[in-house]
Length: 292
Image (cartoon, rainbow, N blue to C red; front, side):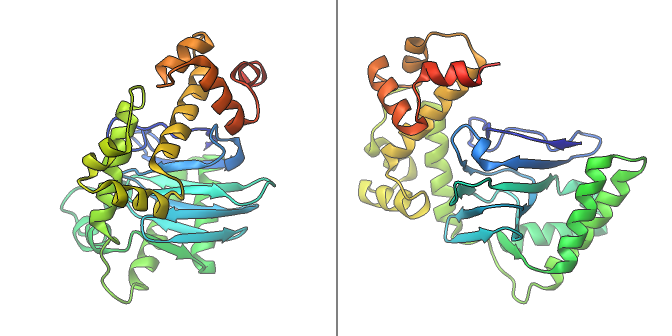
């Protein structure tokens, strides 16, 4: 089965909140347009699963803690476990993608097995956080796995596991040097600050408080946000609150004033003003247009 999503739900630690597939087969395939996400982009997030992504249409920028990667239609990437990443659309035309997100246990099998100790565990711990995918063989294996998830014929789980195993083995064999996940401390610091915002966005927040969570100065906090997210810490807080408010507008019957206060805005008029600037419509218009 192929899934379409329009929001990234996260737990109180900031990790993406979802289960890849089921406990019986922990793998999910997605076919989405990033423009359909509530925020118009894929907010920074991380998850304990591995992810393979191919862009079908449009142009996007993949943001990692230490680099930005511009992707055109046909480009792909592999993201290792627990790597902080987000995606921004760079074109007004559709930015459609296909991805497969899977628990490493799907390939490693039982803890302590040869697959676990010789391949998966070293790859997760010592491999790079990100791999661009330009190999046609990898692309063909991805298509094979994706189509198997789409059709779900009897025994498709074997096809998916075999194809993903081939991809992982190719990436591991082509790794010329042993790499550690880039700038681990900076990534962990950013995760701590984003997680804290996720937990406290309903309250009054200052840059000083955000910086304190990361154990850094206000200036370093501003530099970190500008480097990774290209916005100030408080601008990120505002975007986060708007996204949360949009989610409530579509899923709850609270009044607009109630939603404004629940999402940390000091007044409904200020909330409406900022919502309109970011979403190009008022909260009421947004609810009327998208509420089902």
